[in-house]
Amino acid sequence: MNDAAVHASGESLNRLAYSATLHCLTGCSIGEVLGMIIGVAMGWGNLVTIGLAVALAFFFGYMLTMLPLLRSGMELKKALRLALAADTITITIMEIVDNAIMLAIPGAMSTGLNEFLFWGSLAIALLVAGVATFPVMRWLISRGRGHAVVHKYHTGDTGHHETHH
Image 1: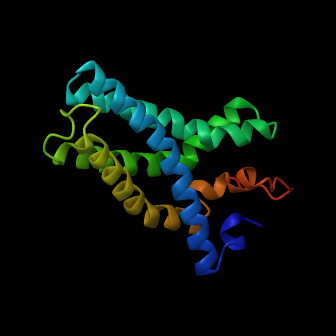
Image 2 (image 1 turned 60 degrees about the vertical axis):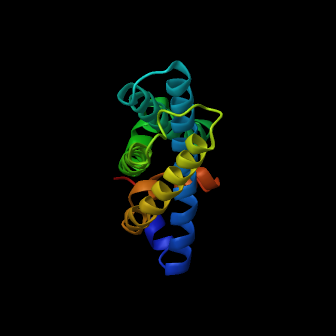
């Protein structure tokens, strides 16, 4: 039995997609905020700051997915493979959207860390990125892809029904 079948109803599919989107957004936000703080504090240009923020968003996004897999006793190589399969598309969408918004808001990337413009822009960018990612997350899960491949490890349901993709 796969997770798509378990979550066949629209309501439970929406709930799972919402939960998975928040999970993905959490990892992305940790990396994105940390990268933006470092880049802005160091006075780096937009390209370098965004590059760091994106790299850290992928790192933390994959790590948040991998931790429950590793705790379940899964070997690192398999956990990494599943995290890449589960998160790459959605992290990419989140990063494109939130960084495009940060670049589009005049002054957001060049203001100081103590300015509302920086924090307000970053919050809006991440919120919109989450909203933009939800339908993709839902579509992936409904087809047994994305977070559906790791969901059982995140909920503790690691019974004998493994999904392979």
